[in-house]
Image 1 (cartoon, rainbow over the protein chains, first blue to last red):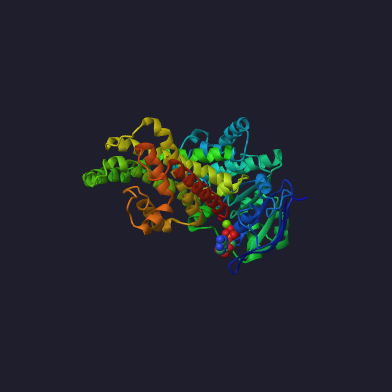
Image 2: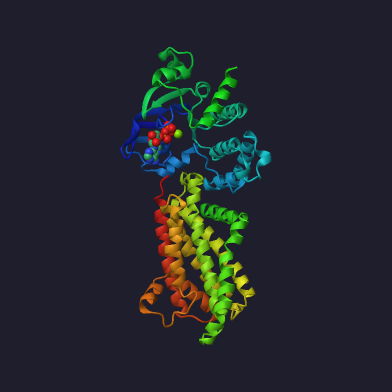
Amino acid sequence: MNIIEVRELVKIFDGLTAVDHVSFSVSHGDIFAFLGPNGAGKTTTIKMLTTLLSPTSGHISLNGADPAKDQDGVRRSFGIVFQDQSLDDELTALENLEFHGVLYKVPRDLRRKRIAELLQIVELTDRKDDLVKHFSGGMKRRLEIARGLLHHPKILFLDEPTLGLDPQTRNHIWSYIHGLNKAEGITVFFTTHYMEEADRAANRVAVIDHGKIVTEGTPAELKERTKTQSLEDAFLALTGKEVRAEEASSKDFMRMHRNVWRR
Amino acid sequence: MSTIYILWLRQLKRYVRSKPRMIGSLGQPILFLFALGFGFGPIYAKAGGGNYIEFLGPGIIAMSVMFTAVFTGIEIIWDRQFGFLKETLVAPVPRFQIMLGRTLGGATVATIQGFIVFLLALVAGFRPVSYAMLPLALVFVFLIALHFAAIGTAFGSLLEDMQAFPLIMNFIMMPLFFLSGSLFPLNGIPEAILAMTYANPLTYGVDGLRAALAANAHFAVSTDFLLLSGMTVIMLSIGGYLFSKIRI
Ligand SMILES: Nc1ncnc2c1ncn2[C@@H]1O[C@H](COP(=O)(O)OP(=O)(O)O)[C@@H](O)[C@H]1O
Ligand SMILES: [Mg+2]
């Protein structure tokens, strides 16, 4: 059985169909990229998968649990990094992690060990006692990723996780996630604007536009199907548009780093 | 339990760290204690009421506990806007425990605030009749705090932003304060107003506090305690229900 099963999922917001009969499945241990332009319905889908929003219709199964019936079962199985920041600015980095660990009932010794390990990986060990409100956007992001992994989730949801991060940090985070994926078999479901990232990081990709899945497959299959060289061109061929970033600043940021990556 | 504890702890940490808020919220009680205390004191004494600061002290403590408590509940709106609310809403724990932890945290903060105002009242000349009664006073302060923190939580769950905040303050909280017997005795006030004060939870909080601190109560202490506890349980249920209905 697949770890994520989505059948005919629909979400309508007063007349606007944000998610339109979406079906897909993600196997155990996949790194699954959900690609689509701004407003395509990616965040809405993640919200329905993570019990924050109830679907208008359709069926979801997450690690064998149905969010409509067994919310806690679903909630225990995933960690999430939301698109918008969700830290407590008035607490320190360590306190934010402790809060999460206690909330998810991670036993104290394991919690301490895991927190120390994660702080190391996201390179925030020496800032752990600083209030989060003094952190840069990238530092907050890294902390959120550490937090999402703290309770050893089976599935990690990442909604635009590396937006606004520098290339080194992105590489770093992805190599850690790949490590976890190998070592612990964690399944990763992420959305991103970085095509190269989906191309390199994901073993499966679904392209969504106007709430509908346009195509699904491995990055290689997608490129072959559209007879394009890069996933970005495949995306353009499929949807007729470039992937738009959330906002101008991040778009510029992305363009800048795309060049760095292409070098 | 650990869920309730960690949410409680968070409220306390946030309170201790926001010195300007802590100090700012002392402005109103100081003003009321000194301006009203010294302004109305002579009139009150002349009218045969006795020492006004003895009467006013418990009222001002109750007032400041009430406002602080409501405010801590309404902070949910900030958590919503700063995104932190999502972190608690996707956790595999019962929503009611989250609500209870937050509300108990807010109530604890308001109780500490009440103690600070008690010290200020001592400076203004207030003297409790018996220090042995302070534990009873603490019980009433905590009940007021819990009741109004739950009201704050209820409003915080209903509202998406702070726009309605002045509305709540001016049309709900201020009337509750003025119609609670905090500032003037309930003896001999018009029937219609009396009916409103009887429906007001703060009335019983102030009265119980006055019984403990000034041995000068309108109702029996047991009446105050039972009515306020009952209203608090109801408010916690309403707050818990509304909190469980929050959608992001
Ligand atoms: N709570 C909401 N109420 C009304 N419309 C919404 C709401 N959330 C999202 N939408 C709309 O649904 C569509 C999909 O949004 P979203 O899932 O956030 O897209 P993406 O994450 O792919 O950028 C957009 O048109 C958006 O405006
Ligand atoms: Mg989105």
